[in-house]
Amino acid sequence: MQFDTRLLHGRAIQRFANREILPPISQVSAYRYGSMEEFEKVFAHKSMGYAYTRIGNPTVSAFEQRINELEGGIGAVCCSSGMSAIMASIFAICESGDEIVASSGLYGGTIDLFRDLEKFGIHTVFSHEPDEEEIRSLITRRTRLIFGELISNPSLKVMDVQKVSKAAHENNIPLFVDSTTATPYIANPLSLGADVVIHSTSKYINGGGNSIGGIIVDGGKFPWDFDKYKVLSGFKKCKNMALLVRLRTDIWENLGGCMAPMNAFFSYIGLDTLSLRMERICKNAEALAKALDGIEGIEVNYLTLKDHPYHSFVESELRGYGGGILSFRAGSRERAFKIINNLKYACIASNIGDVRTLVIHPASTIYIHSDEETREAAGVYDDTVRVSVGIEDQNDLVSDFLEAIEGSK
Ligand SMILES: *Cc1c(COP(=O)(O)O)cnc(C)c1O
Image (cartoon, helix red, strand yellow):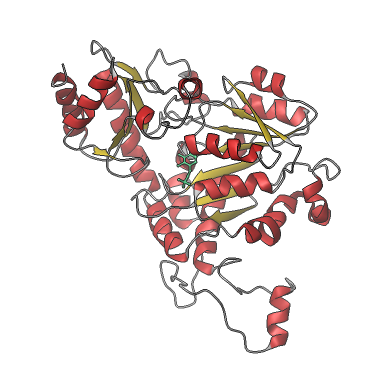
């Protein structure tokens, strides 16, 4: 089965009780049982069943299982947001005194979260490039996690997952990859060597810009050293499932960041058209990048452009696609604002992965609280415009940008 077919007819597509084609929305907080004996078995994990939506919900499970299949995991846990997924995945293995090695150019919220974690005794060091050598040089005996994004946004640096995972594994450390900007349509980090893949489903997976959500998918191959990962030591019996069980029955459940059933339903429907949307989005993004490339005073950043420093990864890791995000530098903040304001179709919004083209000036919004060093490491300059390309007509989209740029002189 090819990806586009697996998306709609894979193993993970469940049969529902009343033959519904889509998962019924189990919009309840709790489930009712006929006897205490029956209910006790559910709590003791001796029989399958739902008890309380924070702990498990059938609509959410239906969505989890599909993403898990598309990423090739052994199980997945949905969260209330991408940030919640990142936090739960870190708390599942790290404790006070531990260190994280993270690649630079991460999502602004993730950088802020790592800063918050300092107060909990979890220290993060950042590499400048998502490459093996630099990451390897930052590993200490306290490092418990390597964290990176497959395609960083808007800097568009691509992590060499094959090499970085090798460096991580040689040190008995897992690699967690946030693959939000790539989506399973473009890449499967687990098959490249990552141990856990995380998505903000709010973006391309949902696709319609209608619900916040996140997911953690466990590849199930990392050989946990239970003396080193003490927070997992109670889950020794679970072996390669230890991380998933720790999440499901412990930290994720207790943090309380579950996905709402309605959001799972919306994202489930969104996922149905992932292939179609990504195909169109990537085509549009490439056409727009090519159209802007070479315009005087405009410096375009898009992965499939021939001179892009990460161009070679398009074939080796990204199935030939450049993704839906491009950015360009306009020469000055004033001109960047002018271009954005001139656009007819692109919505000014702080999101990515919508069917509509979205545009933003990151320095004055998402990165407004970051210092200059952090911003520039993330590829955000005073004149950077980020575009999350949508599925509009290619020619309309290109003309809109060309006219907006022409009118900004
Ligand atoms: C948006 C985003 C997040 C955070 O996800 P939310 O659903 O907004 O919490 C994390 N990582 C990346 C790469 C993102 O784009």
